[in-house]
Image 1 (tube, rainbow, N blue to C red):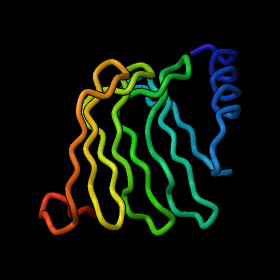
Image 2: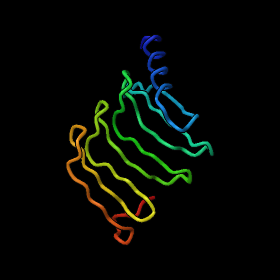
Image 3: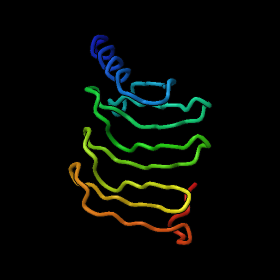
Image 4: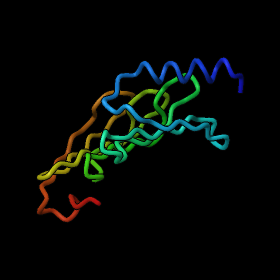
Length: 119
């Protein structure tokens, strides 16, 4: 990969506004994507996912709270929201279905439903 393209990509990522200051970027030669891990100030992982070489979010992304519990599971296709996204909080699990960046349905469960348990 051209060093200028990688440098441009890193600069684009640097401009994206995330609350986390620390991150780890690595080119995945198998997928030709940039794997990224963002960290909370306390050192816990905040987000993991991948970018295309032109800076678009791609594939599965996961967000975690400051205690390390998963809070969001998301899917992107070249920067567009697609598929099932899951949002966890203390009382509910919300499933949002996306097609080509548009919400197609929303389903919510409370923690008393076994499907709402998350790790």
